[in-house]
Length: 338
Image (cartoon, rainbow, N blue to C red; front, side):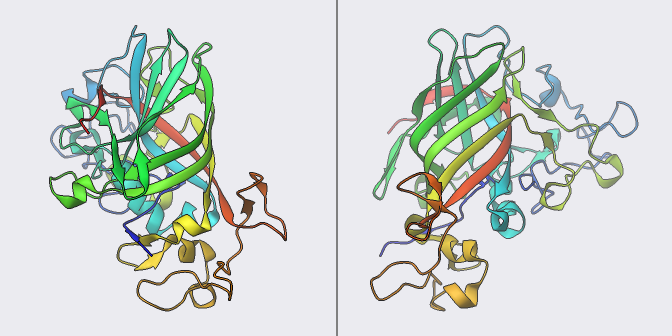
């Protein structure tokens, strides 16, 4: 059996609420302190709006780093992914790992994650289409992102095109399968080119609205963060770094996530989902889910993959995933070279 060594989202992380990083382990926007040069400053008492020119070059409510005003084709990157279910992924270790990767590596803007996990949304208002998928990591978020276009084991990684026409900014879209790559660092080498793959099924992006300037979904929580605490989001996202503006649902199968091994824990995501390592784990290294005499996973999920509905006595081979997210404008440079 091949194991995917790395962390898994969701949330998607989660989608990592649980999607901001405080320094190295809080939530979605870690931040420089209010006394840091170019970090947080100015504004009314309690206002955590970044004031560095890098952060304010584009007038937006969400720390956009590219101006989409008036564009008919434009891109955004998820800035925060707050996992709402399953409960075991909504807080704690995995949520923070996902948040650290999702948070942009731009400390002068109170965004001091690693930025290695990028989920892009590219809208074409002329055709009513949305292209969405993971991106390759970059050391310079201002230079933009490209959609990952590669194979990783048995998984083909490429963006999916959805029907998602904008109606006064409101939109929704669905995808049967979306393989989301999660990279572990921004440097060259094997870890940068061999992502962890999260295979999401029946992905639904709903209840979202793009701002009038095409730069934001949701907004930065400038008034809800505490300057006395360095404008850092709280543990597990309370307070959050962003106010979410869209929702995500999908499901993940137990068989697939039993091959996703969490670094540092050496346990599969299947075991983590169980909430009871002793009862459902094999106790081996890595620790994967116990199986019955027929090779089936003993753990029962809350979802049925064959019907895409709540689990029954006869089918409980998956977990439903729920999340909310915010997104900010970035430059999208098309597909990455294969």
